[in-house]
Length: 230
Image (cartoon, rainbow, N blue to C red; front, side, top):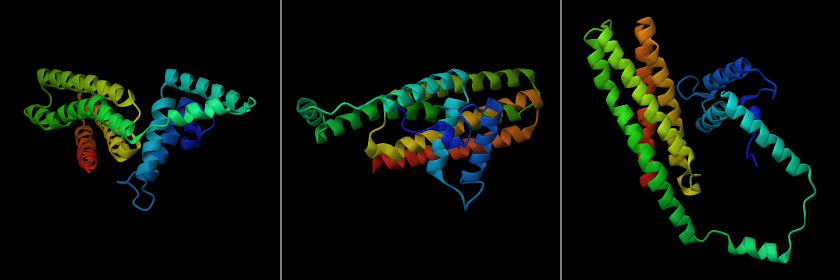
């Protein structure tokens, strides 16, 4: 069952075009981003907006999501069968205990947080050195090729981190940590794409924007580390 409606989150019609979805996403990000409008800043809303756009901004993901919405609607419209005593008993016996919750936390930290943390650390800590090397001659073809190879490597690491992050649902007790990681991954992705425009245009504004997005991502990465240690 789908927990939330991404179309409602982005305030678009289910039949909206990709261009309309992108326009709505950019408008909402500008409205709620903490670095753009302090009065309307909403960190949790940004997370929901990014999650919605991640699905609706990709054709295949959107098709899969629409199918889930349709299946969910059909289930809601079908008559609900009364729960039998045996079913109630099974539900009660499968309710997680304190030990189960601790095991879920340990599993998430081991299989999600640690590998994602390692991949993000590698990406975020390597940018400054790459920028310094490129600064020697921003128009040198060899340096530009090396910079593009570096960005491609970052994309691969980011994709792996995103897969790891989605591999398990986060425990409720680590919701803040998961939120920081999610937003950090989003900022890293946007930063990589901004940096990738520089070899195509030689416009240093893309470098500056990419660096700023990486700085925001670094702050979120550090906040995730603090929240997981509490």
